Length: 126
Image (cartoon, rainbow, N blue to C red; front, side):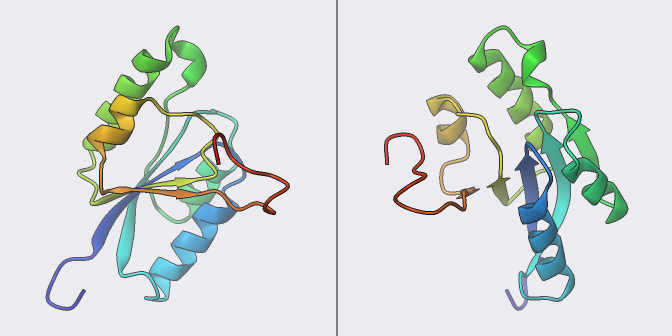
């Protein structure tokens, strides 16, 4: 991205943050021309939040259990994400199915990392 600012990444996690750590490491060594500006988890006990804090990245929780409806959770999550003005939202082991409104809001700026052994562990409707 010569001549431009680095991509602003907001990373969504639900667990240990091993994919997050790989992203942080690749940003640090320049392989990814980006900066993780925030990490948001839907689970307050996600170890990935600690990984973010250790890297000096703001870490927040938007607990899905605090919202009676999926749409309410997604709206709250979008509000937190948008506060960081991301160029790209990365779902790195984020274990929630998102509403069409969420996906539409980030159209062209959403990347889902979902490593698994295919075809044995497919995602929904794959």
